[in-house]
Length: 253
Image (cartoon, rainbow, N blue to C red; front, side, top):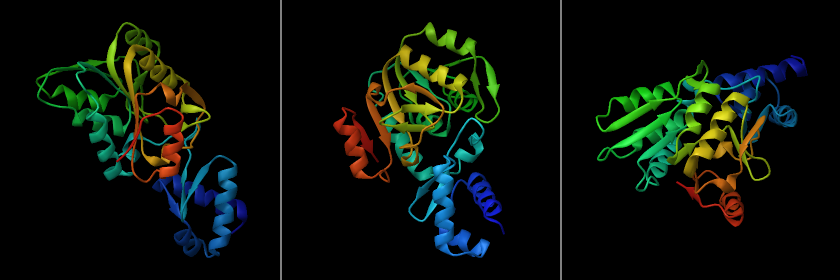
């Protein structure tokens, strides 16, 4: 197998499975582990993969973005811990923005059931799950539905958000870095997130450790704008401390 073909196979498997491991690829492709590591380093230099200890996972871009169905199968225990911790930051809020994505959906489900809430969301899944609660008023932000995320985007969504003052916004991202802030591949999605940031008094970011250091096309916020950054304990403590020294309150759960 030629080098280019082998690297296409590696990238395809990473995008299909969500991650790849050096040992498994070496066995499958009948090459040495060092050859696979060289391939991963090169793919990382192209901005297509990010290496981890013993493997790699795909970087999302305008050309490639994981579906909501894929996200529901990745890092699920970590995402549930993150969701519980993020929901615990609700405080006395009565109006809540829930971003698109699986982790925000879990946050919505973890919100307290013993008091009335108004939930604004562009996520079809979140709107459906929260509408079943008797004491929750759901405002579905109407617009064009993106198939990959099952969430709405467009100027209608932005206009609706601009008319509200929201107590807390739970915001996600495809990447978060100290240099580039919070980013997402799609400009239309970035506009919704930016408008939610403007509308909210308090902002909470939630995302698994693999989001840290990743950078996508559209920047919509600085990490310092958030009251709290909630992630899992797989984020190295040293990296968490760098965010803390920059003034962020970061929770590793």
